[in-house]
Image (cartoon, rainbow, N blue to C red; front, side, top):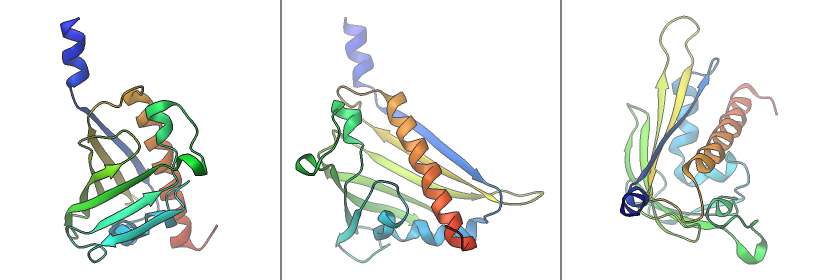
Length: 172
């Protein structure tokens, strides 16, 4: 029993990534550095707005609502009466390395000690392209599994970069 308790106290860590064959890192990075603009790209996220500081500056905070991550915590569908939301603070950004880190400072989705980093990494060699890496670290979510969370993030990342790619090349 004690061993199970120790396991439940460990942090969840995951890396979700996708490769874009035709998009260079310099082309897609502007979408990510728009910290207050996540709603334009992330599926199921109708609201993302700045509530503190200047967009893209360390310490700025965005309010996001509407996405279905609450299902990971309690297996209930989100509804207008039970809107999922989070307040997220940008804690680091490096425009040269094309990376930023943010943390959730308050939410109703069951995430505690959540820190996430997104890296846009150029791919050298034939054809170029880039890889988008999304690293997450958080305390275990009661009633959820890391595997379920990774699946949700993977689907979200795939759909998000597809929308960004379509915006770059002018297709819908």
